Length: 498
Image (cartoon, rainbow, N blue to C red):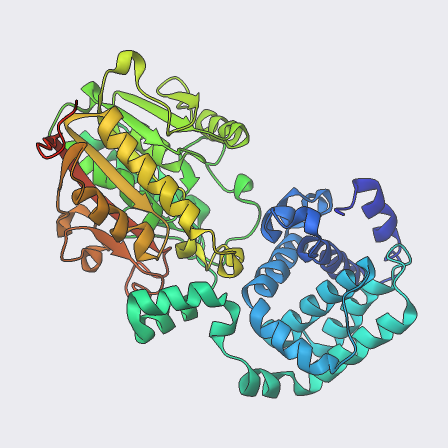
């Protein structure tokens, strides 16, 4: 049900008579409503991605584009609380029967987000949100428009009190996930995690380095150059990532040095797996090492490995669509001649001539629950954990048994805060009675500046959302990283092969 560009033109023409500022914000609301509409045909694509793919969104000016993105993000992030409040304000008799009801629901959620969680004047939030429904192209009956108007006006009067007395932050997290978080980390830590999910993550950048940068202080100067040219409140984090200031505006592709291919967007926590692998080999000749970047897209870790100086980096990615994105990113960074990309199923892929490799970085497919502050859709995701756990275990076993050489290193990582997907998978690997024999290479504090307190008793790295908010690192994604060496093959004498 996403609009074509011609449809958007006709709809936006209806707004010509409005004052310029009101008109631009109204078009932002129109596009935002389309993005959060719960059309069954589009539920596989999360709302922020729908927004980014919308031609109307691309045509907006920078300020209006930011407003539309904020509308969608906050509506999705606070969806549980918003729906609770709307259910109270609707009273009874509202049933979803027709497509027009989906439009009304989406518009009400958008209006509630403005009234309850955004700094938008009440009059504008109600009037301009309802104006979206009044467009003749929507064909919404006048009775339903009046109904929506009454709900939002009541929300403008009673919303804050209803919000405080009838909702809590945990309402925004689907029950199965909330229970898992509570069981894994306890109520106090779970509260910190859920509160961090309600904040917007900053944008972090990784800056390319070269072997020459390592031998001199050129990399430090390059970091300073990126920081200074992007400007505003942008700063360098202890781990070497760049934190973009919240006052920096405009599309990422228009920021300084983007076209020069010096940096790429990557959360500071997401940069840790490649750093873990680099630390394991930094005293060796990296140019002789062959590294596999399993499940590689969108390419941030691959770019790190190439810029760190590994001689041969091979990316494995099963999705053709994601491979196109990977190829585009690597090309922009000028690294296409220093790595290779294979569209392959990681569970079936093996090196040429079955020649084992020095290292594998496996950032496994997971629930992505550590990214809730930047991807609020994961807070309401369906429970497909069993399927993911099987994929993770099979991928990890295949990497260490069939790809990694004896003495080689595997780094296993997830952007999940669930122990089953992370610590649990490493415990199962170490407890196996056949296949490759593995041992943990424990992390040291000097391996991860800024993340020293995240190293656990096993020598693995566990970053929880909100854990570092009071430090210079600030808010980061949740992440898990473990590093292991293959010692050999387990000899199981109890079950001899016949």
